[in-house]
Amino acid sequence: MIFVGVDWAEAHHDVCVLDDAGAVLGRRRVRDGVAGLAELHALIAEHIDEADQVALGIELDRGLLVQALIAAGYGVYAVNPLAAARYRERHGVSGAKSDRGDAKVLADLVRTDRHNHRQVAGDSELADAIKVLARAHQSAIWSRQRQANGLRSALREFYPAALQAFGTDLASSDAVSVLSVAPTPELGRSLSRSKIAAALRRGGRQRNIDERAEAIQAALRSDQLAAPGRISGAYGVVTRSTVALIVSLNREISLLEEALGEGFDEHPDAKIIRSMPGAGTIIGARVLGEFGDDRTRFATAKSRKNYAGSAPITRASGKSLIVLARYARNRRLADALDQWAFCSLTHSLGARRYYDQLRARDNTHRQALPQLANRWVRILHTCLERGVLYDEHTAWSHITAVAA
Image (cartoon, rainbow, N blue to C red; front, side, top):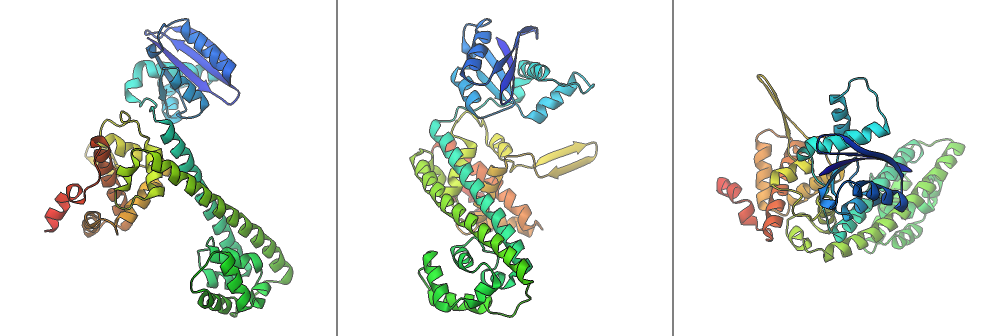
């Protein structure tokens, strides 16, 4: 068996090949792309006959290069860059570093410590596609929120009446439809009720249009402090631009949501995930995309919870014992699990009782919600492992028994 380290970069990759004893069998710098990948395969083929005799370490778990290495049949280990840096420090304290040296560090790591690292999962093509769409959808929502936060900051400086009319929901169709035609206080005060109603209809509102238009007009015409004319005009340009960006993001989010729902519906695990209270199409697709569908990836529920970051960590030394939240985690998955746990409070009696028990132990809402998410990850793992749908009584029988 041979061990390969690949220190990847945008234009080229440094490769190092070691034998069982750690002796260097070959080194090479290859270009990124098909020609470079062929050189890498040729270097490896000089020393082995079968692809399954290769353990390869790389500081990457996705992308065309990783997909090509997995397709070749190599055992690919995605090593966290921080772990690789700490491994480098085990063998030298000078602080010296090079791409060539990093490739050897990765090869040595998979030679001696690959049992401590997770091999890159062989997820299906559909699961990878769902992951791409779910991440794009989530990123678009985060981008829209950043724009909405910027819009709120601008409105506070010159247009407080708009904040009174729409509150913090500045990405809503009502807000963007009215602010697009009245980006300044002067234009807002001049809007008639019929023009506001027309804007609301263009934005998609179908009910209570007249009542909503009346409330918005009253807020826009309320007495407020005013900024100087030139400053107000400048902020108006900024507001119009930001509103246009939010409108565009709203449109793209809807398109991504539609594509994500179609992809999720095709996956065989969708039925099981949808049976979980609080996990609808969007949250379910995010959870599936981040966990993947390779059944060999997580041997136990504990390993799945550790990957999700929902399980706490323990620091014990002497008489000291501290339990802390796990901050080194997949942020996208953690966000999806947090929303799932929150939504489940109104869809699952067992989840609600478990949450209430945690709150009764003086846990805050933010302390109790991750613990509930941790429990949901365990339930999900069991259902996927057994291929069964969620059952409320089975999942929370211990909670309902205590409550009874």
